[in-house]
Image 1: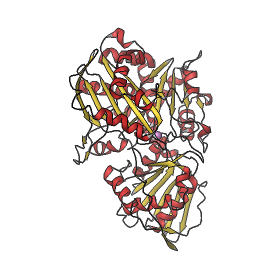
Image 2: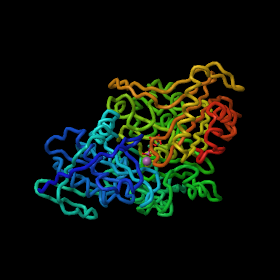
Image 3: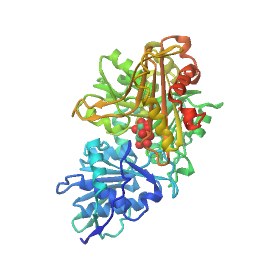
Image 4: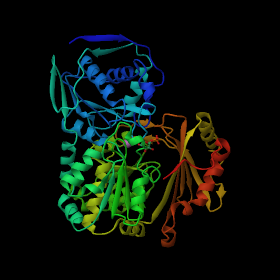
Length: 543
Ligand code: VG1
Ligand code: CO
């Protein structure tokens, strides 16, 4: 095999964020940009002989070209084999499952998740380790450090691989195997859930609607919901994968999954509606005229886990990211199991799952998952709900209301201010930090500040410390305001304000979240001075 060593210059902006390196496609298309980052990944690893690399992406624009480059570089850097999803497509949870089932050394996942796709939009790349999970910070830090000093990369002169055909290609001691991206994942789901009960629930006349938002879960949804569970084909929408996600923004929330929301709140609303994101790791859950916040969804799945065959024996523990509401904490307490609070991003759950400390994990950002893989998993969350609906014979709304009655309600909302100039966003953070000493014990109407800090996490398994993970303003009554900057955007900064108030009062529980949180929202504006400092009066997205 002919291996070429290419001389290159470092790019200084290849710092992985919350979930890998995300940049505009045009940035990735610059000569050597992708190759530099891939070489930095490989240089951060100790690649043993006969190692296999899993490669796949969410199917967005530039996915196919990037995969050919990665295959050629894997060959040149000592990998013996690459496993790649057909057409180069693997959902993020399916990629995690492939790494684990085939015991590959690691994987490269090409995704910018829900960020829009196309020549003028976003692309992303991240490395997952042999447990199937996103590389921990010590690896992403090493990749960044290497990327700042890279001077050459290695690439093999191989012909382009036909990714449309399932099968194996041998190339002078190096193997590329194109695999069916859907089958293994669908088999895993079938082994975990009570498919016969869900089939009966559907056959009894219950209706579901699933929106793949023109992104990666379409083929998986057809196989699972239609072929294996017997749902009518009309239950699925936007299930054809397109390179620009139909020109949309495949973020499953009330703003961007508008078509589905109209159906769920329409005249002939189905019993259950759900959507997933660009790379298939997020989910949104809706009932008939009812929205389930992701934090409540996690708590409810935890509370009803025993109805699901895979969790019939109970849960080892649960974990949530710091900004996620404390709803699941209350369930964990009732179940007598541990609940861990980690920084934002799935990479922090891996150690806890590997150590057998937690079974379920979740984030407020429409991400829920379990130790069946090491990524959050959108379709898995949808199946959890279908399984619980079928086994309990209750509606989505009645399940959630009963949950609030039992555990109290953590009224919750996140306000995002997108595309804020970086300097202004930094000014907001600096303004709050400047008040760390003076805020405690200040009174804002019904809210008395108890504690303010910048969240720092010490991993209980390996002792690693991750500091500066978001500002927490904790009030004496248990309410919270959390402020952090997004680590996944590609333009300017996104300020996220997370608001949470706990209530056991049944009347309060029925209120719309924005109404119930109105005072806390004003307090957040007062403390952050966000409207004054950024000129923004309204959030871009409210979830
Ligand atoms: C966001 C979410 C975070 C999630 C991350 C990746 O990060 O807040 O909870 O893990 O996206 O999800 P940030 O740094 O922008 O707040 V995905 O589906 O974009 O891979
Ligand atoms: Co995603």
